[in-house]
Every structure is written in structure tokens, then in C-alpha cells.
Length: 114
Picture 1 (cartoon, helix red, strand yellow):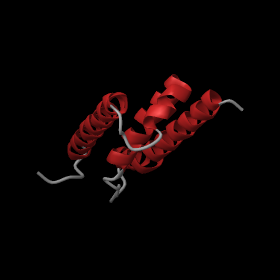
Picture 2: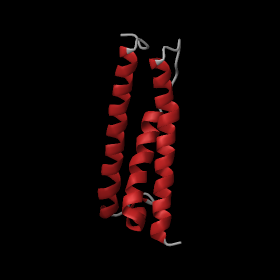
Picture 3: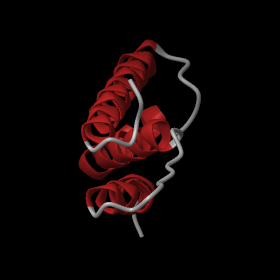
Picture 4: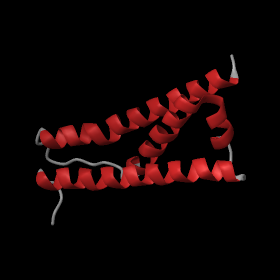
């Protein structure tokens, strides 16, 4: 198995983990809220972990071995910093937007106070 294939498989695994977390910890509670369940709970950590897994999984899936070489450890070179930090910032921004959207949906359904 080549390094590029291993990196893409790792990206696919990260993507699957991110989608699985999103479905289990975010979409299911939202579906329960829309169905009128008395009380729901969801971990806010899902809005941090899920976007990171999805964004870095997509980067590995698209970039393969070169992306894995840049993402695979702590950023030390300029090239690593130019890839890792924007991906991290994009994941945090997506997580923040998803969190505020989620809270707005729950508030509209009457689950969160004002």
C-alpha cells in the first residue's frame, strides 16, 4: 500500500468519524427536538471535534501523501504553517457557525430560554 493511499484512507476514516459524530451527537438530538421530545441533550464538544475531523479528513482525502506530510505532525516549517493554521481556523469557524445555527434552531423550537 502506497503512502498516498494510506493518507487517503486516513482521510476517509477521519471524514467518517466526523460525519458519524455529527449524526449521532447533533442531528439525532435535533430530530428529537423537532419530534417534540420533552428534553434533549447534546455535547457542545461536537461543534469542535466534528469540523476538525471533517476538514482535516477532506484535506487528507484530497491531498494524499503531500498533505499528510504537512499535517502529520506539529507545524515546524513555513509550508506546514501555511496549510495547518488556515485549515484549523476554517474548522473553528465552521464549528462556531454550526453551533450558533444549532442554538437558533433549538431556540425556535422552544428548547432554549431567551
